[in-house]
Image (cartoon, rainbow, N blue to C red; front, top):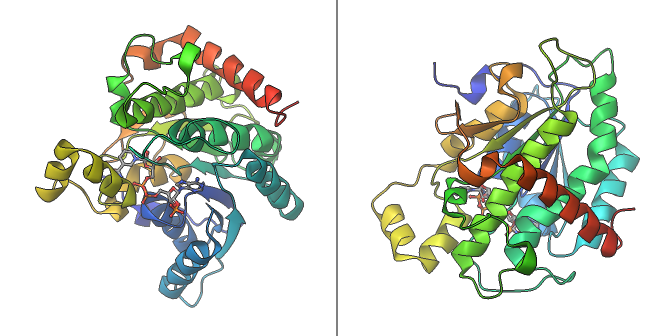
Length: 316
Ligand SMILES: NC(=O)c1ccc[n+]([C@@H]2O[C@H](COP(=O)([O-])OP(=O)(O)OC[C@H]3O[C@@H](n4cnc5c(N)ncnc54)[C@H](OP(=O)(O)O)[C@@H]3O)[C@@H](O)[C@H]2O)c1
């Protein structure tokens, strides 16, 4: 049976963060969760965009809703805002049931962040790693509670089938910002890093053994397919192939493209045995290939990232 968000259970009392929740697939995800009465924090760099998104979602909710939506100011191009966002969230909320790492850019020109990293690498990957690290103790504490059913607490990370284009070892540790590569190469590397991150999280905090355990966090990496969003537009602007695919109508509507991430974040149809898996359209479990299966690479990238975030002063 094909998943649709209508089948989600009631989310009253559950708290989610959706990065990039002001637009595209993140917006649709926030909306679907709010429809089931969740409290949703929309990570967004622009207050007007976040407020417009919140007002738009609120205007569609039934009068009986108990959902609430909040803007969590975050600019992935400045890691200090990730730290501030985590502190702001933790000052307001003792629990976190779902962390949806969705914000992203694709095929934008080479640009360095405030912290000296290339825009794709930092926006799509590094900022999400830091946000996860700062919120992991709260996710774990939430998953330990007797009143939170096992499997409620989840981390879902947006990736892309573009990761299959990763060349060589997959991650260019010697030139991680790929200054000599093309924009697509930088997108590809960041999307492979999203998968390696989720797989290492799965190894560290995901389910172990056959018996469900209090405290376990369920994870997934999601490829949403080609969807008609701002990101696809910037891909289309940079590539004849992308432009042609969009023109020919191969891009899906974002409300459908978000089914996979919504399933992984909140559905009872997402089984414990699926934790750590790769979800593809239409919201079904698939298989990882190539460098995504390299266990050493998962560990190596995790330790490179921790060292780098310590060097930059954002992790202890
Ligand atoms: N659409 C597709 O076809 C497709 C295919 C494969 C994978 N994906 C993945 O799906 C995810 C969502 O993409 P989408 O298609 O929904 O794209 P989108 O409509 O362009 O939305 C991207 C979101 O990320 C936010 N963002 C970008 N840079 C940011 C920054 N520096 N700080 C904070 N937020 C930032 C954007 O905020 P602003 O509005 O402020 O820019 C926006 O909310 C991405 O991770 C992407 O890689 C999408």
